Image (tube, rainbow, N blue to C red; front, side, top):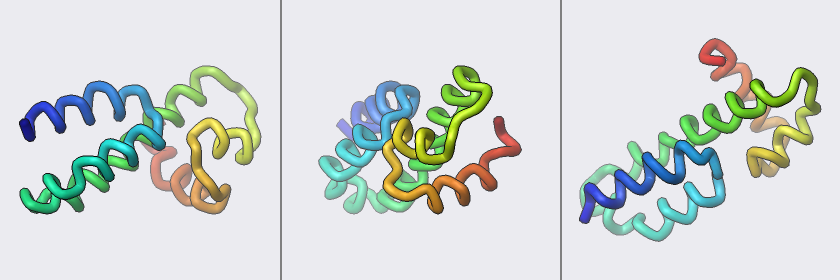
Amino acid sequence: MYIKIISHLANKVIRNGNLKDFFNVVEYHAKTFKKDKNYLLVTRLRRNVIMTNLKKINLAYSRISLQDMSDKINLEDTKDLKFIITKVSKYL
């Protein structure tokens, strides 16, 4: 069962790049992740979801505002996005 959860998380949610789906899956399976002591590891995958989104946006737009990017990634605050962009810009 645990393999199916991780497989779903990796194949569907992270590759899709939807933060809402990611948090829904993590929240739904939180007890399993905590029991297996992998909860922190799984929550760190958030960065991969955001990077996937940023790569898609980078390919699609030559110019886009931070607010529009935040809306597309489903982030609540543009300050959070600024920090994330500085962290992941070397991977884009």
